[in-house]
Amino acid sequence: MKIITTTMLRKHISEVVNTVKCEDSVFGIGRRNKVEAIIMKFPQHFNKNVSEVTNTNANSKSFNFLKDEPDLYKIGDLKKKYV
Image (cartoon, rainbow, N blue to C red; front, side, top):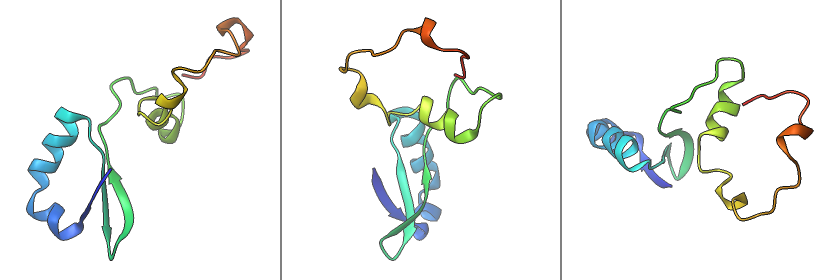
């Protein structure tokens, strides 16, 4: 994640949005070396039945580290499908 200041964001908002959109990058926005917000690509498959946080996590790269882990459960083990 690249961290930029609010001043840099104001000056380069178009470039930042295009980079997020086209390269699937994430930017941290902050002041005095403290991240206060992030800009990331909006989920392509937004599920209105779950929270924004769940949608963001389900459609981000947050859990890519698990792709090589063995599956412990099967879909049939779920009582209710959330995402």
